[in-house]
Image 1 (cartoon, helix red, strand yellow):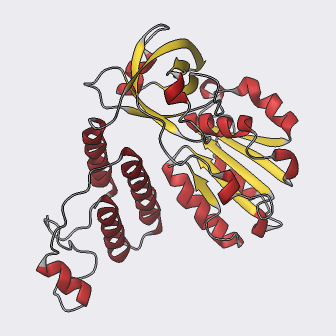
Image 2 (cartoon, helix red, strand yellow):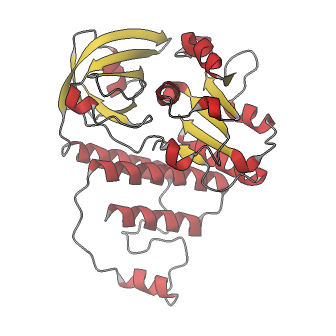
Length: 329
């Protein structure tokens, strides 16, 4: 089963490599893979009998040392690297795309919102749009069936009476670049809405999570915007809500025109320009914050995978309860 495969690879890495940075990177990769495999509905594989080497290692009587291949085809004795896992995940998701029920959507509006990124409003139809219920969820988008789909988080708050969804796409050499080259009126393939989103009521309830840190990098501002505008945070009843938004420079900043409205809601906004005059990152801002009441803190993150692991480590050092870092993957 895909869940068992993820757990086995994860366990091997932790046994074989103790470097914290590598652990955090793999933890994010495997969590992302497990979540996406789950929402894509992977067909379960027939049960396999564990190999003799695997059984011996589990019982402690084998010659395999911890961290070596346990029942996998062994290419030497190295644990799978993060790079190989990313390549494998990419191949897996491409194969799974064939099992998705794709819908046709049209580009209703396109607007440049940064030097290399565009805002799209797609008409996906009311049936598909009604599947969007929690801020932070995403869809897969492609120009045609020959392309590997791009995973794009939705930027608008869920609205059950509309067939329109909004997203921000950063151009590149792959599918995202092809999408950014489209004009208004073009048609694309869109998957059903996927992912767990940000389950704020469950994971960040008002009674225990009074201080909220919203942390976004790059196009990760899109799902954070959806969360802010949805009202799910109940901002007025929190002690504090801070938005830490990291981007390259002002030319690569999306939704800056909405900053004023967010501040009026009661959000404290801090920007981190990695290539700006000060050259800072969101983690630099966060680690300067004094967490006066760590028991009430929660962080909601969108953007780089590695951020979740870094912030978890920082929260642990500050005495923040475990499980207070929410991601949408």
